[in-house]
Amino acid sequence: MTLLVLVGPAGVGKGSVVKEILDRNIDFMLSVSATTRDPRPGESEGVHYYFISKDEFEGLVKSGRLLEWAQVHQDHYYGTPISELEKAERLGRHLVLEIDLQGARQIRGRIKNAVSVFLLPPSLEELEARLRGRGTETESQIQTRLETARTELAAASEFDYQIVNDSLSETAKEIVSLVRRH
Ligand code: 5GP
Image 1 (cartoon, rainbow, N blue to C red):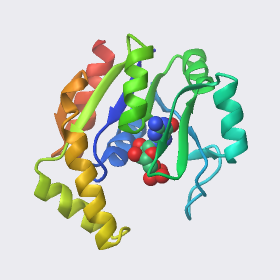
Image 2 (cartoon, rainbow, N blue to C red; image 1 turned 60 degrees about the vertical axis):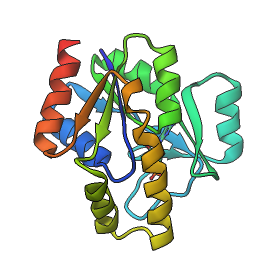
Image 3 (cartoon, rainbow, N blue to C red; image 1 turned 180 degrees about the horizontal axis):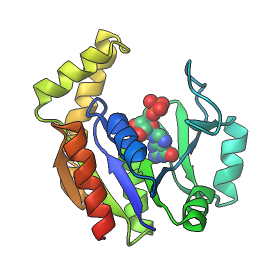
């Protein structure tokens, strides 16, 4: 069982890559995070996230039940329950973590044999086009996210592998083979 951390700027296509990996490889499973944000339409409890209150989140932190956690976008907390790791060990599956940069750095420090992959956009122009294409953010949110993306891209070399996500299926295949070879 290998822990795979997938990191990269918003809009780079992490979610699609994760879905492609999970849909095609039964030996991989998704780590479901705990979060204090509200569910979005279509998201369900225990599938996309465990939606919990701030008090419950603090309880998890205090009792040491999170592998990593971070405050993301100022007002919300996100964390990986250690129970996800235990579940993957029990089932003998590789565990995929799609988390932010702060969390990915904590994992690197704690789990020595984790594989970390930083997904890069083909270019900054392409990243901007993808962010706009989602249609979910306002212009000022897009500008903020691009600014964050530029800072985050500078962290790419901290991780084990950097992969340019220009083809979804190729990217997913490459990551799967990296993990299986590990
Ligand atoms: P969203 O609210 O759009 O689902 O996620 C916002 C950000 O939180 C994304 O960058 C996502 O990767 C990150 N995130 C999701 N779960 C976790 C987690 O368990 N830990 C950390 N550190 N970040 C997370």
